[in-house]
Amino acid sequence: MKLVCATNNLHKISEIKNIIDSSYQLVSLKEIGITEDIPEEENTFEGNALAKARYVFQKTGMNVFADDSGLEVVALNNQPGVYSARYSGNEKDYKANNSLLLKNMEGVTNRKARFKTVVALILDGKEYIFDGIIEGFITKNPRGSGGFGYDPLFVPKNHILTFAEMSISEKNKISHRSRAVNKLILFLNANTLL
Image (cartoon, rainbow, N blue to C red; front, top):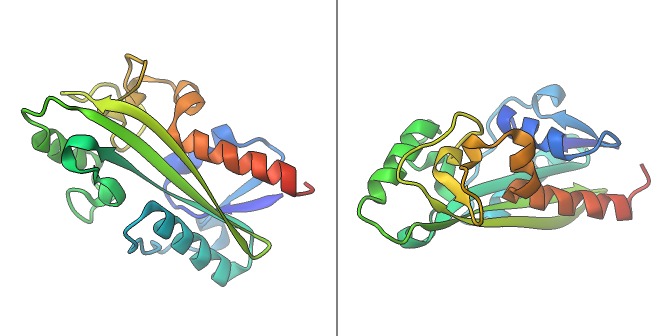
């Protein structure tokens, strides 16, 4: 089955391709000629994921899924949340976002946080939502060179390595994105004929 993955973020596509099995053919936005950034103007992960999926479906009529993910930090009233990618500005600069987060966490002892992903699927014109959450905490300094976004600052609960210190396969066993995508795959396997 051919599925459009509604993102131009190569890191996300790489992670998802490592989760999803080969019976599904993932197609990127670039491969179907959509190179513009799809606006993320909603105030929830669900709203943004659905908006992106609907945008692609309306343009192409193809089966599509989109995700919206973010980091929610307890001591910062669950910020940066839906603004995670643009926390320090519209440039979506990972390093600047991490620096701002660490600055805002100075002197804060409660470092609990969670990553959340919401996946919106439009299959044969019908909409479905799947989510994935992983609890953890924010380190005091960036660690590791893998992953992207806030991965160098996030240690999952019951682990000692940040996401950025893990291999992609280690991260994909436990990450918020893999939890949401695995729910998507279970649904597709149960509801489609490949």
